[in-house]
Length: 317
Image (cartoon, rainbow, N blue to C red):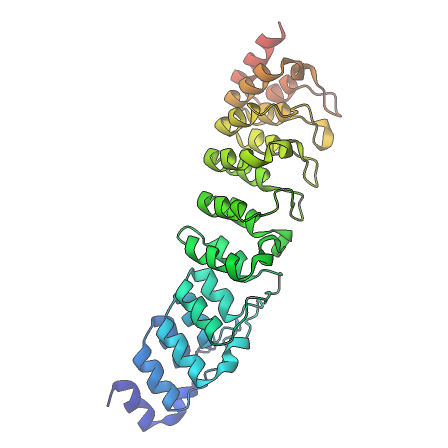
């Protein structure tokens, strides 16, 4: 008889004991650690397979997230209703499996009767979760798109589509895959960001180049606060991004709130290389004043960026 069985034999009540801090049972821990033999012993001795922690996690959630297919199978055989349990974030077992990138577990869940048409509390579907952790999830994403093609433009947390998520995570293969399946390129999230905003904010040139193959006209799209992708790159000092974007002839005179151009933002932060690129692209921006009457030169001087101010001053002569 193994240690677990011995403990249960001596005191059967221990099987339902919970960690006071998390409300985890022994079954939760065994699932989290991938101990299938202990899981079997616990289930045979009456462990509650539907017990949930303070965070709402059931044993099946933990096993799915970690990718322990054999344990997931054991839990489903014990009680299929575990497929319908949600945690405090509204996540089903299939969300957890997708989040962990476990295609085999997703397929197991679907074979057992789970559905892909489930949303967490923020509106995220399994495809969102696969894209959040998509570095090695290409097969899983491909499968989810095949089984539920309508999920490709589903909006979830903060109004983000799976494409937005993949862009935010900077996983170029996932973005390429989603685009090849027809992901909407003009979709914006709750902040008005499209894929280009994410690429320019991140500084990922490879991602930007991929998106520009389809999204060049969207370089002039402004977010909810009036900023274009170029504004994001200029403020962050991503010179390579700005250089790449400028090849597509965007309108860099678009002003964000306060009348601030991308040049104002770069000058304010002292991003000299970005400042040079923008001035070379459109020297007329040197004289643009924001709503307070400040030019990019005034911004650079006010923030103490002497090298940037010196360059801007030299271009006014």
